[in-house]
Amino acid sequence: MNQYGIKPPLTEQYDTTLYEKPSVAVDLLIFTIEDDRLKVLMIRRDEAPYQGMLALPGVFVGIQETLDDAALRGIKEETGLTGIYMEQMYTWGQVERDPRTRVISVSYIALVNADSMRFTVGERVSEVGLYGVEDVLQSAEIAFDHREMIQCGIARIQNKTEYTNIAFEFVPEEFTLPQLQKVYEILLGKSLYKTNFRNKVKLLIEETGAMKAGEANRPSKYYRKVRV
Amino acid sequence: MNQYGIKPPLTEQYDTTLYEKPSVAVDLLIFTIEDDRLKVLMIRRDEAPYQGMLALPGVFVGIQETLDDAALRGIKEETGLTGIYMEQMYTWGQVERDPRTRVISVSYIALVNADSMRFTVGERVSEVGLYGVEDVLQSAEIAFDHREMIQCGIARIQNKTEYTNIAFEFVPEEFTLPQLQKVYEILLGKSLYKTNFRNKVKLLIEETGAMKAGEANRPSKYYRKVRV
DNA sequence: ATAATAGTGTCTATGAGACAGTATAGC
DNA sequence: GCTATACTGTCTCATAGACACTATTAT
Image (cartoon, rainbow over all chains, first blue to last red; front, side, top):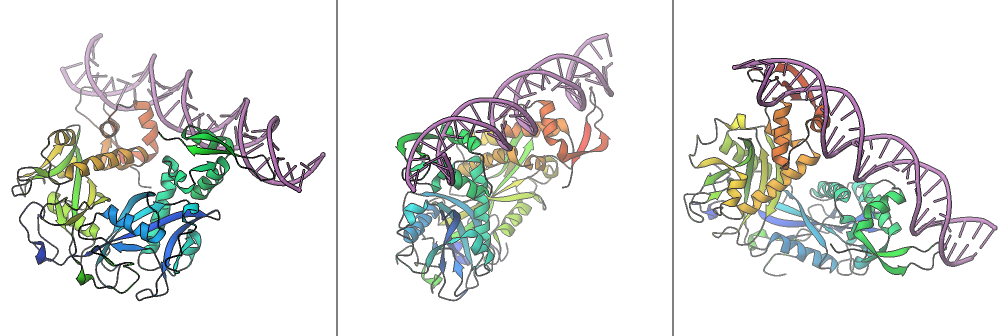
């Protein structure tokens, strides 16, 4: 029994009105690949604190709203998109992470292919934009603990690229293998051998029958992800 | 602008007193290996809701307390232990997960070797005990969404056993290789070949010089984890 | 023909997996 | 000696990695 709460709290009678509650928000890491770089969607703040700095988009969690629903709502608001890949990443609970009041933030990762976002980002709010993660981490102008969040997100994506198929989330429904390989190379930060790469993904894809035309070289085949 | 919160909430002026806030708790999955089984620490509830059912221990997060600190406090209260392995697992935000009021729960995994817990669990509260995860998942008497949490925790531990060294957390500082191999076999749910297992861990360990005596067979050497 | 990129065949090195054998304690 | 478990040597096989080669388009 102390300033922090009731003990043991979930097994005995309690009155939550006695204790001050934190706010709970969801912060979004919306990643895409554009111009051969991994980019993240950020907003330039026009209010204190951290005025003029870049921040991740976020929403407060409604009292009758799940965390996933809050994340989906935020993604829809920022990109106009639904039905894209999303997963919970980590929950950030440093006491002073927001200087105004106590806010606990559940961060979510969303992966979008650049084509579907090309005509949505920037329409609603001009301060919204896609920033290359290398550039944005170089610049010191990042609000709150969002730099840490971005680093955490990049690490998560790189890890999962090695043992899952999340890289497919960055390409459109129909894609070429050179295109998909480039995504892997960007995410992993190293170049790959064509043969080995193709062997690794060949069970995951099927030809569409179409070919990419118009380039001054042998045309590449279009593939789609095979649904398992 | 709706019942759920302010939009965009972290980039504009807002007044959090206008919106009802959830309570935030930390729930603990304290795992150990005892009698050649993976066990989890649970508490039998003596109050509604879910009276008489088993629940994971948890604490509310204080308004001036980080999530990690809340988890450490809970672990100390339940086991008397400090300095053990702990990591954040997942945050649970279903609206009706606690029928009394909205509670968002950040779950943490802690791994303890049975020896250090043998004389602490059960002293403070007689309803606290270690339960084999297979048994507890069979029985339907689990409170809240804690069954899901346990399943999630087991999956996390099994995954990380394959690509990290968390299995070492379940053995004391000095251990034999048959003992460590047994831990791996319990966590992975399959038997391993001695030679291959030893090859895999040989760079992670060093001999202490001591031997295990008293058994009617060749004595095994004691090892410790080599600090990297 | 040339340049540029797409796509294929095959060798090698590494490591996981399997199994047979030897070693050392108590009885 | 016997039994039980600790410990070791070595073979096989799957797969990641590396590289050389062929194919097809626009100019």
